[in-house]
Image (cartoon, rainbow, N blue to C red; front, top):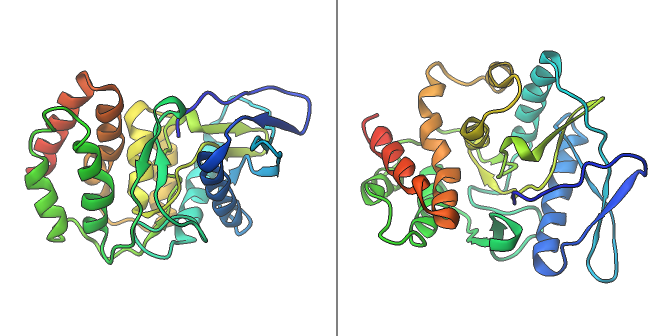
Length: 260
């Protein structure tokens, strides 16, 4: 969920109002990522308590400008978070049942989680098709892409990764101790999709992040050619929520992916 996140100093926690099931989802995602952080993954602004009316008391993070070594360390730790795994492609955090959530807090959309044996089938059924259905007139080329995804044309045999799920640069903070993740939409997917989100709007020292991640995750040569495919999640999400130029950009990216 891409939301405005308070970046205030002083106390060790701050309160975020996120009641009901969306708050349950955020808490489950943060707990799942924090478990990976305990084994060398990326740190998170974790939940320290929950109030009776549903407010989340989250660890407060002191922001500092990132440098290249911090970016490289983030890339390596992100590979560890992903390697912590998930029950399947399309599975939510441990213990979560039913759909999750994605998008801005004032326009939340369901993330229709369901276990899938392959990445391509999950990406077609859970991610792209439901979002494309929300775009008036659809996104040109989606049908052909869904067929190729379901047929396994882009599957590579990598196991389900534990994704942040909304890893644009606004959900990546930098503390004196290193990178800290906020506002996740975590589920089992492909690690390159988190990089696809980062490639959408950029990030400080992005190439350092990507190179360090690729080495730690042992990505094959040519992996960057697949980033447009994985960027389609955030493009379809923005097309569904905001429309406008995102629809045309998504269609152009689909056209490129179909040429691969």
